[in-house]
Length: 262
Image 1: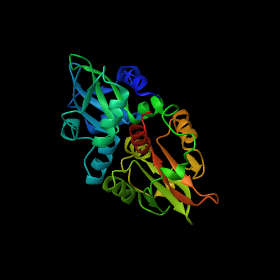
Image 2: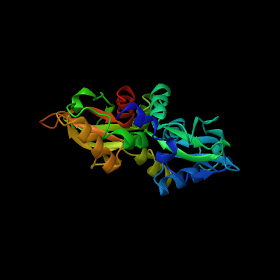
Image 3: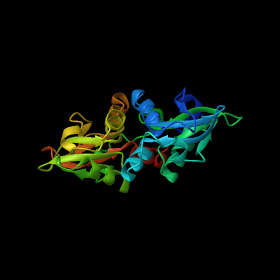
Image 4: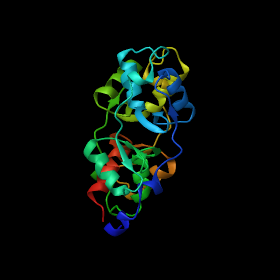
Protein backbone atom coordinates (compact mmCIF):
# COMPACT_ATOMS: atom_id res chain seq x y z
CA UNK A 1 0.00 0.00 0.00
CA UNK A 2 1.31 3.45 -0.88
CA UNK A 3 1.72 6.09 1.80
CA UNK A 4 -0.98 8.24 0.18
CA UNK A 5 -3.49 5.40 0.43
CA UNK A 6 -2.60 4.85 4.09
CA UNK A 7 -3.32 8.49 4.84
CA UNK A 8 -6.78 8.12 3.34
CA UNK A 9 -7.89 5.27 5.62
CA UNK A 10 -9.56 6.96 8.57
CA UNK A 11 -9.97 5.51 12.04
CA UNK A 12 -13.71 6.17 11.72
CA UNK A 13 -13.96 3.89 8.68
CA UNK A 14 -12.34 0.95 10.51
CA UNK A 15 -13.42 1.35 14.14
CA UNK A 16 -15.90 -0.88 15.97
CA UNK A 17 -19.20 0.58 17.10
CA UNK A 18 -21.46 0.81 18.99
CA UNK A 19 -19.33 0.51 22.12
CA UNK A 20 -20.48 -1.41 25.19
CA UNK A 21 -20.51 0.88 28.23
CA UNK A 22 -21.23 0.76 31.96
CA UNK A 23 -21.43 3.40 34.67
CA UNK A 24 -18.67 4.00 37.21
CA UNK A 25 -20.66 2.34 40.02
CA UNK A 26 -21.20 -0.91 38.11
CA UNK A 27 -19.63 -3.88 39.90
CA UNK A 28 -16.73 -5.75 38.34
CA UNK A 29 -18.94 -8.85 38.28
CA UNK A 30 -21.64 -7.10 36.24
CA UNK A 31 -19.06 -5.64 33.85
CA UNK A 32 -17.41 -9.04 33.34
CA UNK A 33 -20.82 -10.60 32.74
CA UNK A 34 -21.52 -8.07 29.97
CA UNK A 35 -18.08 -8.62 28.44
CA UNK A 36 -18.53 -12.40 28.46
CA UNK A 37 -22.02 -12.34 26.94
CA UNK A 38 -20.92 -10.11 24.07
CA UNK A 39 -17.44 -11.63 23.73
CA UNK A 40 -15.79 -8.24 24.32
CA UNK A 41 -12.11 -7.58 24.98
CA UNK A 42 -12.96 -4.46 26.99
CA UNK A 43 -15.75 -2.29 28.28
CA UNK A 44 -15.84 1.50 28.47
CA UNK A 45 -16.95 3.42 31.54
CA UNK A 46 -18.90 6.47 30.40
CA UNK A 47 -20.83 9.42 31.78
CA UNK A 48 -23.22 11.31 29.49
CA UNK A 49 -21.51 9.85 26.39
CA UNK A 50 -18.05 10.93 27.58
CA UNK A 51 -15.52 8.11 28.21
CA UNK A 52 -13.99 8.31 31.69
CA UNK A 53 -12.31 4.92 31.91
CA UNK A 54 -11.77 1.51 30.36
CA UNK A 55 -11.63 -2.02 31.78
CA UNK A 56 -9.97 -4.74 29.70
CA UNK A 57 -9.53 -8.49 29.94
CA UNK A 58 -5.96 -7.90 31.05
CA UNK A 59 -7.30 -5.73 33.89
CA UNK A 60 -9.50 -8.69 34.78
CA UNK A 61 -6.43 -10.95 34.95
CA UNK A 62 -4.72 -8.47 37.26
CA UNK A 63 -7.86 -8.28 39.42
CA UNK A 64 -8.10 -12.08 39.67
CA UNK A 65 -4.41 -12.40 40.45
CA UNK A 66 -4.82 -9.94 43.33
CA UNK A 67 -7.74 -11.90 44.80
CA UNK A 68 -10.27 -9.07 44.42
CA UNK A 69 -13.96 -9.45 45.29
CA UNK A 70 -16.11 -9.35 42.13
CA UNK A 71 -19.43 -8.70 43.75
CA UNK A 72 -18.56 -5.73 45.94
CA UNK A 73 -15.93 -3.89 43.88
CA UNK A 74 -17.07 -0.95 41.76
CA UNK A 75 -15.52 -0.78 38.30
CA UNK A 76 -14.35 2.79 38.93
CA UNK A 77 -11.78 1.51 41.43
CA UNK A 78 -10.05 -0.77 38.90
CA UNK A 79 -10.61 0.97 35.55
CA UNK A 80 -7.85 2.73 33.61
CA UNK A 81 -8.26 6.48 33.67
CA UNK A 82 -7.79 8.87 31.96
CA UNK A 83 -8.51 6.96 28.78
CA UNK A 84 -6.13 6.88 25.84
CA UNK A 85 -8.09 8.16 22.88
CA UNK A 86 -7.72 9.17 19.25
CA UNK A 87 -10.05 11.13 17.00
CA UNK A 88 -12.29 9.80 14.25
CA UNK A 89 -10.36 11.81 11.66
CA UNK A 90 -6.96 10.29 12.52
CA UNK A 91 -5.66 7.77 10.01
CA UNK A 92 -5.38 4.08 10.81
CA UNK A 93 -1.63 3.97 10.23
CA UNK A 94 -1.16 6.67 12.88
CA UNK A 95 -3.18 4.43 15.21
CA UNK A 96 -0.82 1.53 14.43
CA UNK A 97 2.22 3.69 15.22
CA UNK A 98 0.77 4.73 18.56
CA UNK A 99 -0.25 1.17 19.44
CA UNK A 100 3.31 0.02 18.86
CA UNK A 101 4.93 2.93 20.72
CA UNK A 102 2.59 2.77 23.72
CA UNK A 103 2.30 -1.04 23.71
CA UNK A 104 -1.49 -0.97 23.79
CA UNK A 105 -4.04 -3.08 21.94
CA UNK A 106 -6.80 -0.53 21.48
CA UNK A 107 -7.79 3.13 21.57
CA UNK A 108 -11.10 4.72 22.41
CA UNK A 109 -12.25 6.85 19.48
CA UNK A 110 -13.87 10.22 20.17
CA UNK A 111 -15.62 12.77 17.97
CA UNK A 112 -14.82 16.48 17.70
CA UNK A 113 -16.68 17.09 20.97
CA UNK A 114 -14.68 14.34 22.76
CA UNK A 115 -17.78 12.14 23.03
CA UNK A 116 -17.43 8.37 22.73
CA UNK A 117 -17.67 7.29 19.10
CA UNK A 118 -16.07 3.84 18.84
CA UNK A 119 -13.05 1.66 19.55
CA UNK A 120 -10.17 0.79 17.24
CA UNK A 121 -8.16 -2.33 18.03
CA UNK A 122 -5.14 -4.29 16.85
CA UNK A 123 -7.56 -6.43 14.87
CA UNK A 124 -8.96 -3.39 13.04
CA UNK A 125 -5.46 -2.31 12.03
CA UNK A 126 -4.65 -5.78 10.75
CA UNK A 127 -7.93 -5.96 8.86
CA UNK A 128 -7.11 -2.66 7.15
CA UNK A 129 -3.58 -3.47 6.03
CA UNK A 130 -2.72 -7.17 6.20
CA UNK A 131 -3.36 -7.96 2.55
CA UNK A 132 -1.64 -4.86 1.22
CA UNK A 133 1.32 -4.02 3.42
CA UNK A 134 3.18 -7.30 3.79
CA UNK A 135 5.90 -8.96 1.73
CA UNK A 136 4.57 -12.08 -0.03
CA UNK A 137 7.80 -14.02 0.51
CA UNK A 138 8.17 -13.77 4.30
CA UNK A 139 7.49 -16.84 6.42
CA UNK A 140 6.28 -17.12 10.00
CA UNK A 141 9.80 -17.94 11.14
CA UNK A 142 10.76 -14.28 10.57
CA UNK A 143 8.22 -12.95 13.10
CA UNK A 144 7.73 -15.74 15.63
CA UNK A 145 8.17 -14.93 19.34
CA UNK A 146 9.01 -17.37 22.18
CA UNK A 147 5.62 -16.96 23.85
CA UNK A 148 4.63 -18.20 27.32
CA UNK A 149 4.25 -21.94 27.84
CA UNK A 150 3.08 -24.30 30.56
CA UNK A 151 2.15 -27.96 31.03
CA UNK A 152 -1.38 -29.43 31.20
CA UNK A 153 -0.97 -29.92 34.96
CA UNK A 154 -0.18 -26.26 35.64
CA UNK A 155 -2.77 -24.72 38.03
CA UNK A 156 -4.96 -22.03 36.48
CA UNK A 157 -3.95 -19.68 39.28
CA UNK A 158 -0.33 -19.97 38.17
CA UNK A 159 -1.37 -19.55 34.51
CA UNK A 160 -3.02 -16.21 35.34
CA UNK A 161 0.02 -15.11 37.33
CA UNK A 162 2.24 -15.89 34.32
CA UNK A 163 -0.06 -13.90 32.04
CA UNK A 164 0.00 -10.89 34.36
CA UNK A 165 3.76 -10.95 34.90
CA UNK A 166 4.44 -11.22 31.15
CA UNK A 167 1.56 -8.98 30.02
CA UNK A 168 0.39 -11.88 27.86
CA UNK A 169 -3.10 -12.66 26.61
CA UNK A 170 -2.37 -16.35 26.11
CA UNK A 171 -0.36 -19.27 27.48
CA UNK A 172 0.41 -22.23 25.21
CA UNK A 173 0.04 -25.65 26.82
CA UNK A 174 2.69 -28.19 25.79
CA UNK A 175 2.90 -31.95 26.17
CA UNK A 176 6.20 -33.55 25.16
CA UNK A 177 7.18 -30.40 23.32
CA UNK A 178 4.03 -30.23 21.22
CA UNK A 179 1.12 -27.76 21.66
CA UNK A 180 -2.07 -29.43 22.88
CA UNK A 181 -4.06 -26.37 23.92
CA UNK A 182 -4.08 -22.71 24.89
CA UNK A 183 -5.45 -20.74 27.82
CA UNK A 184 -6.43 -17.21 26.79
CA UNK A 185 -7.81 -14.17 28.56
CA UNK A 186 -11.12 -15.03 26.86
CA UNK A 187 -11.16 -18.41 28.60
CA UNK A 188 -10.42 -16.78 31.96
CA UNK A 189 -13.13 -14.13 31.44
CA UNK A 190 -15.73 -16.81 30.75
CA UNK A 191 -14.68 -18.73 33.84
CA UNK A 192 -14.88 -15.54 35.91
CA UNK A 193 -18.41 -14.95 34.63
CA UNK A 194 -19.68 -18.47 35.31
CA UNK A 195 -17.76 -19.72 38.33
CA UNK A 196 -17.40 -18.59 41.92
CA UNK A 197 -13.88 -20.03 41.88
CA UNK A 198 -12.67 -19.29 38.34
CA UNK A 199 -9.05 -20.21 39.03
CA UNK A 200 -9.72 -23.63 40.55
CA UNK A 201 -8.33 -26.57 38.61
CA UNK A 202 -5.56 -27.06 36.10
CA UNK A 203 -4.89 -25.91 32.56
CA UNK A 204 -5.88 -29.27 31.05
CA UNK A 205 -9.46 -28.95 32.32
CA UNK A 206 -10.17 -25.51 30.83
CA UNK A 207 -7.76 -25.02 27.92
CA UNK A 208 -8.96 -24.61 24.35
CA UNK A 209 -8.06 -27.69 22.35
CA UNK A 210 -8.91 -26.06 19.03
CA UNK A 211 -6.70 -23.06 18.28
CA UNK A 212 -4.95 -21.25 15.44
CA UNK A 213 -1.84 -23.13 14.37
CA UNK A 214 0.58 -22.93 11.44
CA UNK A 215 3.98 -24.28 10.39
CA UNK A 216 6.99 -21.99 10.67
CA UNK A 217 7.47 -22.36 6.90
CA UNK A 218 3.99 -20.95 6.14
CA UNK A 219 3.78 -17.58 4.40
CA UNK A 220 3.29 -14.75 6.86
CA UNK A 221 0.83 -12.84 4.71
CA UNK A 222 -1.42 -15.86 4.15
CA UNK A 223 -1.40 -16.69 7.85
CA UNK A 224 -2.32 -13.14 8.85
CA UNK A 225 -5.18 -13.10 6.34
CA UNK A 226 -6.40 -16.33 7.95
CA UNK A 227 -6.15 -14.71 11.40
CA UNK A 228 -8.55 -12.03 10.19
CA UNK A 229 -10.95 -14.58 8.68
CA UNK A 230 -10.92 -16.77 11.80
CA UNK A 231 -11.09 -13.73 14.11
CA UNK A 232 -8.26 -15.14 16.20
CA UNK A 233 -5.72 -13.01 18.07
CA UNK A 234 -2.94 -15.56 18.20
CA UNK A 235 -1.27 -18.23 16.08
CA UNK A 236 0.79 -21.06 17.56
CA UNK A 237 3.78 -21.81 15.32
CA UNK A 238 5.14 -25.35 14.96
CA UNK A 239 7.95 -27.14 13.14
CA UNK A 240 7.37 -29.66 10.36
CA UNK A 241 7.12 -32.46 12.95
CA UNK A 242 4.57 -30.56 15.06
CA UNK A 243 6.89 -29.39 17.83
CA UNK A 244 6.37 -25.97 19.38
CA UNK A 245 8.43 -23.17 17.82
CA UNK A 246 6.72 -20.07 19.15
CA UNK A 247 3.81 -17.73 18.93
CA UNK A 248 2.55 -14.78 16.88
CA UNK A 249 0.07 -12.27 18.30
CA UNK A 250 -1.89 -9.39 16.82
CA UNK A 251 0.53 -7.02 18.54
CA UNK A 252 3.43 -8.56 16.61
CA UNK A 253 1.54 -8.07 13.35
CA UNK A 254 0.71 -4.43 14.14
CA UNK A 255 4.40 -3.76 14.84
CA UNK A 256 5.27 -5.32 11.48
CA UNK A 257 2.68 -3.23 9.63
CA UNK A 258 3.87 -0.05 11.34
CA UNK A 259 7.45 -0.82 10.30
CA UNK A 260 6.49 -1.61 6.69
CA UNK A 261 3.90 0.97 5.60
CA UNK A 262 4.56 0.84 1.87
